[in-house]
Image (cartoon, rainbow, N blue to C red; front, side):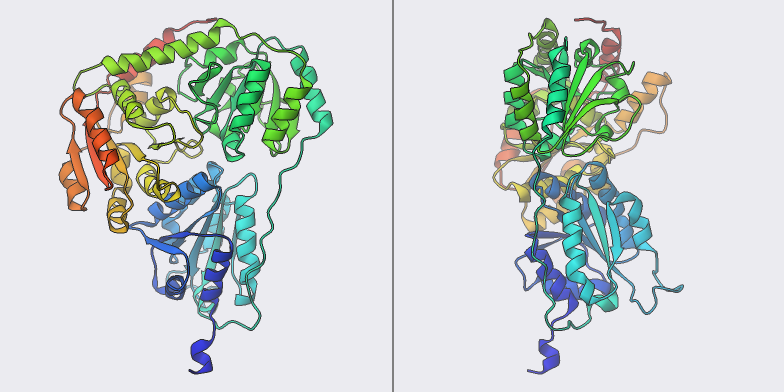
Length: 554
């Protein structure tokens, strides 16, 4: 065999570096300019998942990264392929999720001039990533790839981007180039003086309340949060992205904050004088809605300092490992708070809504009935992805969630169309759990082509399409604020035939009583399934009218 035939290429080094980082999957579409990279994956332990649109690849990488804490990897060719990744990449960054996006680029011999498919991709990705760079040579690859993963996975996590020029990817490697060893950033203990300052605030507090966000989930702080709440007698609300980090069936749970109107849980914040935010990030929920008068003292417990906001004046920042911070703060506070009746009333009202949904037998189905049946069909650790739209509003506020990362929404960028590709990645991350994508018909058709990917790759999950023939959330908002709606209605295909054309199973619900048994059957089958359920969104305005009439204190 000739020396040329055995010469390693930069593409092989990239793959070896990905293996060294523990990458299990690469989601993408190959192009002419990265064929050496895609070919090199064949001789690795990494599974290449061929998708049908690069946007789907980015969403898959995002949800995989969100569920595992390891950066998901999305791959594309240059130009249009790379640009198609951008929505999912931006979604990952705004949702604090580690993703490494790697695309081809034209060769260095023509990147500097006007030429076919030349776009400054590094500049395009820079505003939506933590770091964006081009590989100038094979020698730079070990450092670039190690930096990419370290940057993506270090708090606050997010997406990074690497452009690999065509002539760099296919270049022969100099001897001795190898992936760099991994170094993991370890969380630190909180500052004792900051813990003491936070304890002083709680020593004189009247009605403190805890708000837990996505950072608490990422930190694995659920057990510490429960112990902290129980030790001090504190009520706990979560953001939509934090759902499940504090179980909704705990006696101190207040539910999730984030609905577009003053919801039940907001009354808990109205009464509070101190907010203890645990892993909360401002893009999850605008702090003006929980501190409108800027009069609450805020104790910010996180791995990093808070962003600046006029309605989020931090009195004390306790920075370090979140679980250790909660343990230290719990030990430093020598009092226990008495839960008032507000928390119990909030829990009772949410419970009554869910029970009301269980009894609603109208057709098309009420959103409450759909949420109730989904909860009955899913186990405590099963995963639901609620796509952006009216579906998200109903699911995020009403769906009881008991474990971290078991009810996923996009609440940073609030992108439509993430749930179907995301469900595929969720099943890869947790193959023994049931996975359901709950999506409106508008969001479903944005990335429904990934049904073919799931069928081909034999990755089973269920898609529940809430069908109303309109962009329901926009219609809701128009009706609420303008008194009429326009340009929101559309037509749909026959979703049963559509699913079957991809090789999936299709079901259509024709009465309220059919949904729960159909969900249970589809979830039990080891195949890709689509269930179309007609939904009556007349309950939307009824809900916002009801919330608008609520007055406190409770």
